[in-house]
Length: 392
Image (cartoon, rainbow, N blue to C red; front, side):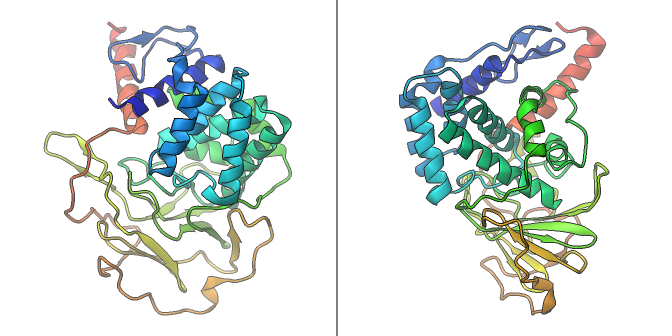
């Protein structure tokens, strides 16, 4: 395990400890094999060195070199929560750079992967709770952008999302519906770390839901556009910008408040591949040159996944741009002119209408590393077995 992975896991545990997370029943530790967290026990904190100012600066430098952008957020949230000298100024500078040039969520825009969307969200909520007035204001702007995306009705998606199982309805969708005022608070069962942490920031999520709708002006690593029609809402990201795990650039979801609403994705699930030994291939560190172009419909291309054509929502359509600084639709309705599809991309165009099952073309095997979401699925299965057998 790399030092970076150990640090972020220490920070995740430390943030859970600071937030007072206590599992309602005995559960396996998500990061340390063979260890358990007892019912009602305060979540054990990780190494405090992981959120030293030097470590935070290292995480920031690493993000600029292509590393994980969530590392500095969770480390900074830990340090600010504890009143660490200099941490507030460090995070104020970092979020200011993200707003001006580096982009909201950096190069992990959106993301359904559990290690990204909820740790950004939880970290921003902690910074809003404990930061100086200037830092808290930036953190609330970050949260307002997440809520604006949710408000459109389009599913949260984007970088690092093409992982097996992430096309299913998850706590990410429950949380999105809650802050948009469409659904109840996310369930805490099974008591996975993501669900326990989301429950711990409910005061901020409730406040976010009641704040005036806002779409603050922030930079983005790639444009994010919403097309809200009479039957559904669609989000498109122009291109993939982070090769660590492949992006999902288009998501379209039926409007309404019922859970598990019909959703269309590009690329089309299932995502990834299963090796002969049963391990999941995340297809990591491979740039598939994914792109999405809207010309009368949304056209997705990739050098790994098959091309997909996604019809726009039914007219009339309102168009919004994340981070534009305005909640007013721009009036440029892409469905007005039924333009021909774009020219073939790097992988050629053998388009399918979204909704079918499309496996990736043969390509680089990538790195066989399970995501936190995958660990959560495994943990859920373990807890089910524990419930029957009574644990070790």
